Image 1 (cartoon, one colour):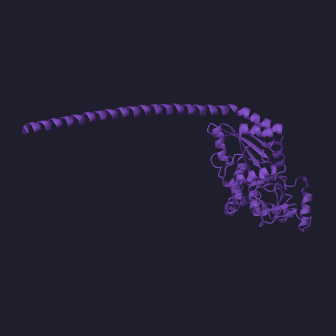
Image 2: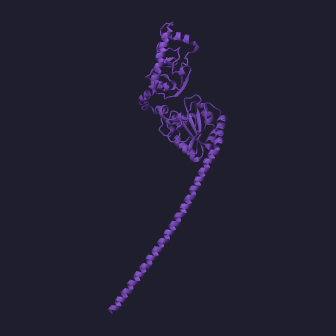
Length: 387
């Protein structure tokens, strides 16, 4: 689920979380993004404060939602009209209208709008002193909540890996786990049920298996990340992805791997590719033993622009793909020559061994005949002596 969070100092933060994530966990993630300690954060949805205990789904948060992040506490604890060290680079949160906003804040808290400035400044010092401590405690709080993350839904587990440990561009050898909350068959069934059966041939395996297939067939890998909840997805699927000309173009030039971001494999790929807008298409190639990012298409687009972008990517990297094919052909030819040489050697060796065996058999036959001849001569001699 993609969320946008706006802070009081006009910063905008985008995060990806699971719908079953609790609000306390979201605040910890936002602490890492904004530097605002989780314990002083207040999240609001449509003007209503969200509680720490409930999940995003339970509190009515949907995909592409906008949340407001404010700093909780009375004006004496966190004076809003003063800049906070460690928060937004120490910039003034309210700018030139700080005096009016201070008076509004004090009235909402039931205090006088002529409160002494000295008391406000004392509160600033207390608040700024607490920020470094909160930042030092961030890794501890993250570790304390790790167990909760791991034991939640599979999608949330991959989210924590993405935020805490997994490098964003770890594309080689680790993403195709095949452990998905939405498998390939389920995604294909839902896709065809909504958009029909005329679509590109989606690879039935994991991302890693699709990449190996692209490498084997000397094609580019096209990765399509599907977000069923995104408003631009239906038009893209109907008008572009399932267009007959586009289908023919993709099947001829690409191995197409598609996944719903509700599934673990696609969810992890969205982090690795840093997908921020959907629908999302990436083109990858396997060159010189490494996976290389070739092109991407994000958000709404037109059919002609979609095809021209992919064609341009193919043209730009066709020489590298041709070099991969030539190198593979060279390896195949070298292997064929070695196999022929090995076969010739084995044939010659078998012929020599056969000749050696025939020679030994001939020698044994001659020796046997000679021994038989001598035995008969001895028997004849013995009979003659008896007479």
